[in-house]
Amino acid sequence: MTRRFTIRWLIALAGLSIFSVLFPYLLPPLVRATGCAHVGGACGAVALVLAIYLRLPVIIGVGIYLVILTSKQSRIVGAQPWASLFILLTYIAAFPFLFAFGNFGAANFALGIVYINGPLAVLTMLLATLIGLSCLPEESKTRHSGARLATLTTGGIALLLTSNLWLTSLTLIPVVGSILRLITGPIHMMAGSILRLGGAYGLLIVMALFIASLAWWVITARRTSYLNVSISPS
Image 1: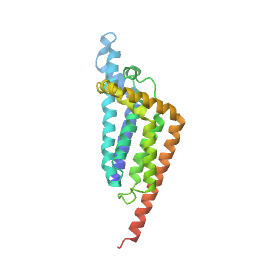
Image 2 (image 1 turned 180 degrees about the horizontal axis):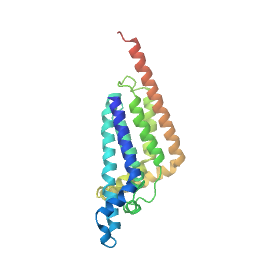
Image 3 (image 1 turned 135 degrees about the vertical axis):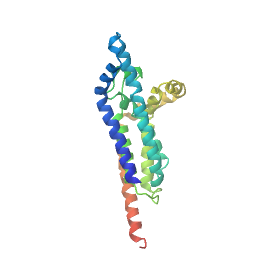
Image 4 (image 1 turned 90 degrees about the vertical axis):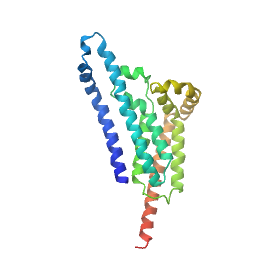
């Protein structure tokens, strides 16, 4: 099960990376194929529509797939439901970067993506969590250990410091975003204050502590699993 989980999330992220890198080369021929060149100014509008509605389903689809994978795997290793929530919110926080990277500039502007902050930290924590879930043994004897508690604590602080990022990302989603903007307005202002208070360096420190505690949890869990196997009767 763990091996399948690892292969599947690696394929999902690799596919998303390849799609993002190749998209600037795929967009022009797709636009020309519509015959927009025969209508003055139409190609820009077609490029805008394609840049939004080809990118969004792919990025949202990969995110949903990762959350589903994580939900199944985290139940096996005793990390449910926090791991699924962490993957969901860090992926949402990285959404502006994932959408804007290599995309048509007008599409980024149309969704209100004018400044991208913190993608390195959230992407690193997202990847570290997936790797950690791949390395944790398929048992839950260490689920209440100090290492697990440290991981949950630093992960919670990381979500708090990045709350401005994932709240902003939620409001960028077409149709849904306009509704959420009415609800999350006051929360968004408070989250922005928290992020400014913590600062970029604070987020990087919390990221490092989260990765260190996750590594500690993996090492502790694997060592306990090995000892249990060694002393169990054959």
